[in-house]
Amino acid sequence: MKPFRPSKSTSQSNRPGVMNYILQEDSGYVWLQNWLTDLSNVTRFRILPAMEEGQELTPLNPEATSETPLQEIIGEVFYVAEIVNMLGSKRLTYISAANADAAGEAPPGDWSPTRVTVHNLRKKIEEQIKRKGRHLPTDIPKAWFSLAEGKFPFSALPYPNELFLVQCMAIEVNGHTRKNLQTNAIEWIAPAVLALPSSATTHFLDAIKTRAAEGPLSTENNLFGDFCTCKGGHLLQLKKMTKKAQKTSGGSFTYDLYKQQQLPLDAAKAAAMWKPWEDILRVPTVEQTIQWLLTALGPEALDFGLRGTPYENYVPDDCRGTAEAIKDPVSDEDLAIEVAQFQQSFVQDVTGLADMPPGSASPAEAMPPPPPGAAAAPQVPVGGTSPPPAPAEAAPVEDGLPFETPFQELPLSKAISNAPPANAPADKPPLEVDISEPPPPPPPSQDGVNVGRYQESLKHINESLNAPDAKPEEKPPEKEA
Image (tube, rainbow, N blue to C red):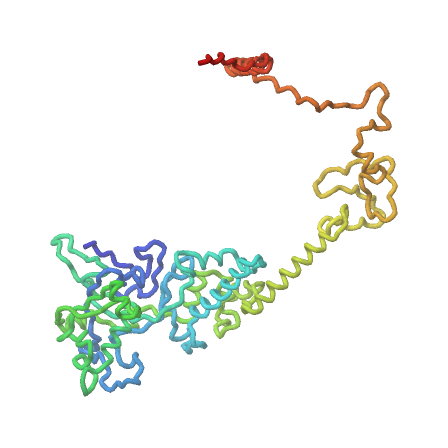
């Protein structure tokens, strides 16, 4: 097994460029994952029970029913957090759902500022990609298009996900273990925080919230069993399912979480490790979330993403109005109408250029008239060269012709006749070419070797042409019998 290298709680993790702001600086906990979904190998851990003043709290609500919300069933053992993973060019990872603002008031919107910003930016970039593919003008910075590139579309603009966090002690994380350098023995990584994948959480929580028999819901009376108490807790193994197992489950689960051996835990030891979630996690205010958005995406993206939303008043003054020139995204129907109008105007422009008479200036080449009293500027074509000199006398234009033709005064019969022109000198007879015999072959190339071969071939041809006619071969008379 490979050695374990935990992520730092507040600075860069092992993955280059990842900034993790989930844990507080002085929490004393280890964040186990460099990537929230990077658990493709085996992970083995033991969930810590929730403790208060040395007493173990009930992990499940015994009075819960089938209609009770999940967060009211699981108690303090789990913490449900909305986390955005690898956002923007800075690749920030943080808890995106704020509990309140700096004044202690609840957030004004149902969505978090991060979710609202990501949603509006993705919608605008998708529209701009369609416009760019149809050769329509765009109004967003070029850097925004890079947010939609990568191995997955919009890999730099991920939507926040609701994840279940657990306080645990881990023995193996994604196939990695931590060993003592002196004894070479495998050590526990504790205390630590683990984010369970969504598919594993769904499977796991469906089992622990379902009663196995009649009576109150408890760690003994559920389909999964005891998963965290000090006395009956088990070592859990999280493993990615094979493709065959995924097909069997209908493709809805990609991870499997199941119990291994029972692992009792001393209550005093558990109380020394477990802390309230507010002492571990960095749950930001609305203002702090917007500052992280500004760091990850920039002022224009922040101003556009929160424009017209309940969080618009939280945008810093130096960022407000920076995206004023960027219009709101249009619907697909309006975009189709704009594409049709653009195509129609393009066809009209091309048709208008085709109908213009030769020699007339196009609108782009037309020069404005000189100011009164100024000398007339010479008419120079667009290419930058001076115009050719005008002929001494222009040929008269026949009636009915809109422009001059090269054969206006020269009939077609005269143009192709063999007669000498009228202004030809008398001592030079007209050129006569005898086409009864083919022209002589060109002289051979003087390249040395090929000259002799050419001469031999030419000699052979001349001898065959000048040889007397061959007489038919006379047969000897046949002898009479």
